[in-house]
Length: 145
Ligand code: HEM
Image (cartoon, rainbow, N blue to C red; front, side):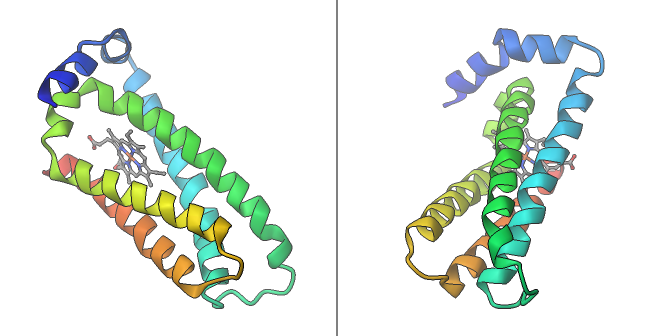
């Protein structure tokens, strides 16, 4: 694993990001934008699953919110991978990175289950809500471990 991380850190992409002024903070800002677009809409959908958002007319907006969230997730994934590459060796040893990765997989399976389920199951909203809030916490913890 550490050999792979070292190879990622020595890659042309990582060198480019590390060697280009302002590129890392720009990617970091885009990562935050991706996070906002992912988590904001999906939290509204989660509350709808939990029957806590009873605004009339919300139901038809749910697929739109889910699509915006997916677009945000693609931005977060691409920028997150780019940020990761710059310090891959350190990140590979950081428990918060692995907690975050595991939670992202959980959120992905939960989203897939939500699409397969025939009815609006409350547990889908509960798992998603906890997973995304925990992902944000784990992401913020990375810098402090
Ligand atoms: C939508 C999903 C994601 C969320 C909600 C999220 C959340 C966060 C948060 C809250 C931070 C801290 C930002 C800051 O304080 O400046 C962060 C940083 C970071 N994220 Fe993500 N992230 C997501 C996806 C990803 C993915 C898929 C990767 C890797 C493939 C990744 C890699 C990183 C890296 C490397 C950092 C910088 C950590 C540091 O050194 O402080 N993120 N993320």
